[in-house]
Length: 203
Ligand code: MG
Image 1 (cartoon, rainbow, N blue to C red):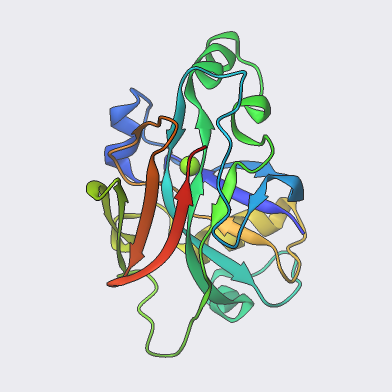
Image 2 (image 1 turned 120 degrees about the vertical axis):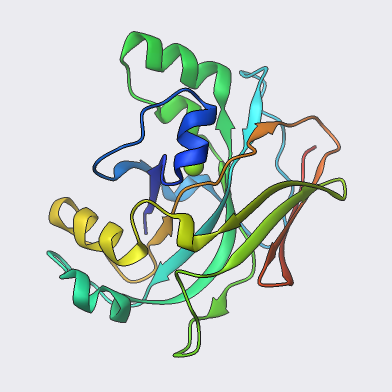
């Protein structure tokens, strides 16, 4: 199982970090050891002074595929949730300045929190879902999946050129604007279409 993440998939978020709006999806991976599920807490890593949250729609693959065509991509995932792409922003900034890979800033243990999965049905408007993230009850991020620069089906078509996608793989589809820093004792709550499906405490 692997975790595929898309960077800068909402233009307002790309701008808030002074990044160019991409013309092709930006992909990075997190290993299985990054997964944080079942409402478990995240222990603030000792090697960063700027742990940040990025709340994202996450979809789960239900079929294996390579070179998946965009028009068939919707048949390859059948569950969704919200996730947090935890980021050591200070480390990422240093890596970016040096032109080095992001893994130590993005793919560390428990850096990919996921909430409870909901089935995707024929009625699900996957590219028109509202979601938000609250921290200690205060709304920090509000998103709608219609604002993605690259749709989930496009992401799958693009990604599967390079990587075989397998059943159980997760795709973090990018974060809207409003990212920011976390502190110990912060309580994160993610709501998807009015349903609270993600909680995570920073310890
Ligand atoms: Mg992200």
